[in-house]
Length: 100
Image 1 (cartoon, one colour):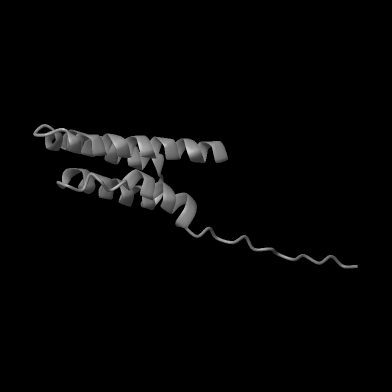
Image 2 (cartoon, rainbow, N blue to C red):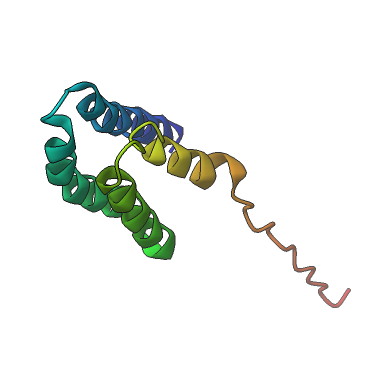
């Protein structure tokens, strides 16, 4: 499980770098963002399931389409939200007493 978690982090950083590299290419960069946006959105929804993954995929799509927002590391922020900031429900202990 821990290995998979960090594999997902490496993948997130890689996708963020791809999204940022397009900003460095003059003239062609914005057009590459239009190509990258749907790919990034699909990748996000595959990496993070459920409602949170769907919301993140919409956010990454919008972030890639809008100009000058490529510096936002959306994939890495989603990883941080999922594995660091999100509160995990605390397990409840149920006490069972047997007739003694």
